Length: 316
Ligand SMILES: C[S@@+](CC[C@H](N)C(=O)[O-])C[C@H]1O[C@@H](n2cnc3c(N)ncnc32)[C@H](O)[C@@H]1O
Image (tube, rainbow, N blue to C red; front, side, top):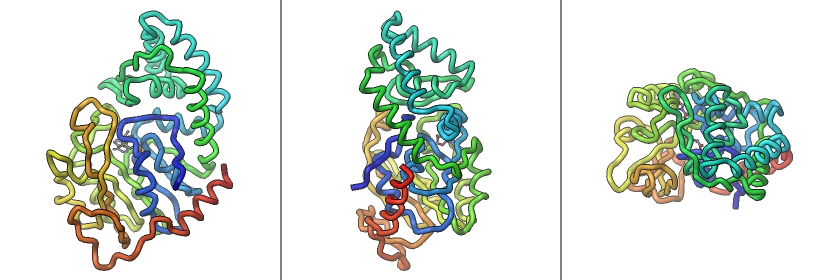
């Protein structure tokens, strides 16, 4: 069983449980891991690649990981910070809310990556959302005892893991996907996990059909290999973007349950899809989508993938 490294940042839509499924599909390539919709970083952190381009329109996520890469944020700095702020939260009036608001206001003015970490770990349901002015928009989880010793240690360990895995060659950028995908060459793999249309819209995460269409055009013309995460259908409806655009590529699907999110629909089971532009055969339920003739056998426990995992352990 693959050990999944959990990142220190949380968010709705985090792909933690899908990482082994995604990684099993990654072909053997000599180039870079290119991830234009980086999010919490869980997929890249578990990719095992030495060279990567990682980008997101949310500047706070990118700044946080750059600070870890530059050693401005270290596990001991995080421990000292969380111990101090956790104690102030515990003692604050209004069941902790007063201190949560102090951090929120400070973050909205100064954008300190440590305050971003605090809000991501003390906000309701582990969600990240920004209002129209680009300010933090998730309420307090209402647990003044949030930063217990054990919880701080857990976060510090996650920062440590990320610091070990993030390579000096990893390039973090704060750009939209249109500026990132053209960087890819035939030796690279692009992994795309764009916002799902109609879900979780916020200041950094609006997503329209025009965006989907631009993404489709860019991925259709790239020389690189790509894997796109999207949803296929749920109990209520199907994702029309599949029939409109993505059916031209290979598609595999599997059931998934997202845990967080306010809307009922977001909490229900969904059938996730991976769309990709290279030959592979997946021995999984495929919801009636016929694998293409040219597809070859893909062993989930591929030797090369394991080799990558092992070389990553050296780094750790
Ligand atoms: C579904 S999330 C990615 C989740 C990530 N795979 C994970 O497991 O944590 C989509 C991300 O795309 C970013 N985003 C939204 N619009 C974007 C755009 N036009 N270009 C690049 N990133 C964008 C959002 O800020 C968000 O972090």
